[in-house]
Picture 1 (spheres, rainbow, N blue to C red):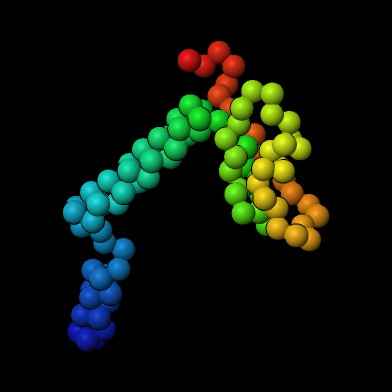
Picture 2: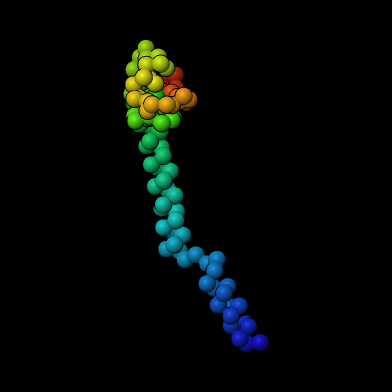
Length: 97
């Protein structure tokens, strides 16, 4: 019975416990990931790009005023045999500085 209690106690202490330093490290990692995501979003808003999903050599093309979807797709250097391509335009919201 004492052996069972010792094993149970060891199992409980070894699993599910997070030390303060581990919790701090996880919180810092989550904060930095969120910060990096925000910086990437700000960069997209300042430098709008057209992202083309598919078998292309250049998946992101800088957006310029007056660019058509056909021009964006043509500038991605599609690989031969590609029939379907999905393009998504990332621009800053209207009224953004």
